[in-house]
Length: 485
Ligand code: PLP
Image (cartoon, rainbow, N blue to C red; front, side):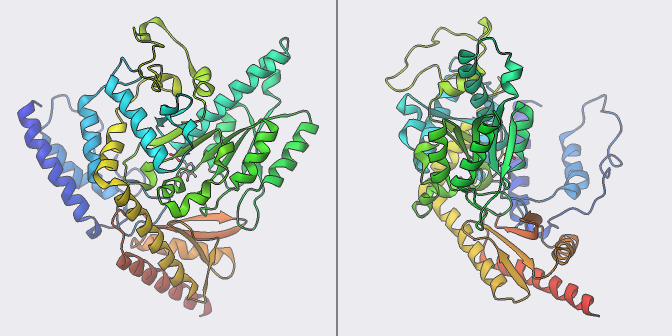
């Protein structure tokens, strides 16, 4: 494909995308296909000669779209939102065209510098204290591929720090023996990626009980740490969650932080979804206690109109991360290594040392495009609209005596269930999803089966909430009537 065909096809693609987004509500939110459907439609072997772009695009509607779950559909209420907006799509298009691999300043200066600048902007937007910013010269932020990677990388950094200290104290002890003593903590409601991080890092991960508000409290952590020290274990890491996946509950980071500070334990905060709401001052109370937090992640690709992937990770002292991730072969070094670029911005913000991959896309472009296009005001309006619609949905549930709401509704998620045994709500969830009119997923909260209703669509409005409630209410009537007869 040459540049002139690219111009033509590119314009067609932009039209196709705009038509897709504008007409999405005429599609079924979930596909009606069976596993292996695509294998039966496409040739078993790749083409020997190139095919026309028109033929490829024809197959999109014929073969691909029938198997797409439309996450941007106004009736998609599953999981958490998958961020999306036109400025973000345009930013990613440009990033693909520039096609740089920005692992260090020299590998693409603008890529590294823009990332440090927008991470500082975003850090300020959500009220992170100055040490977390690049401009402080102490800490800084970086874009990772997912919240799961943020948590894993922080656990590995905490493990590195702990092993280094222990090696100093017990130089003759094998690393493997020391490793077997390390222990980390989260609440039972932490995302499964926290358990996985422990598994990948060979660090025992204890999942602690939550209180009646589904929140991990300081005294529970303190007791677990005491028990483990008595057993000869060494507590190194806590992952607290602000906005749990199951029910958007909030661990008490003020209490947990005090325990971590006393016990010299790394406190990471996973605020993948709810952290975005911190751009609205009325939610700033959720980071009370941030002064004792070591590292923090938040995904604008979940709830701030930025397309996947864009997980933001900040750390209070950057060398706590880079010291655990640095290998420095000659072919990756460059002439500016270690030189102070400006008073506060160090050229040694070589992002290859801030995570697992070497290669990195120019992801800050889409975040920059989004922040500049909407401004803080526009982004606050988006968050507040989702919160308002979740409250509206909560009112519908509360006004219907057949249902109950589980947990507090503070953000864009409402967890609800039919009163009665779990099997009833499970059946309702199945019927609604089978209808193809709405898509939601369930969760278990303290043994209660709930349906999660997440406000997801970029332009979600009251009519979408009314539509969803109508479907839920009708399906519930069908289910309960059939049960009686
Ligand atoms: N943490 C929380 C609180 C989440 O809700 C999720 C996913 O929904 C994750 C982590 C995992 O996110 P990712 O898919 O970016 O790894």
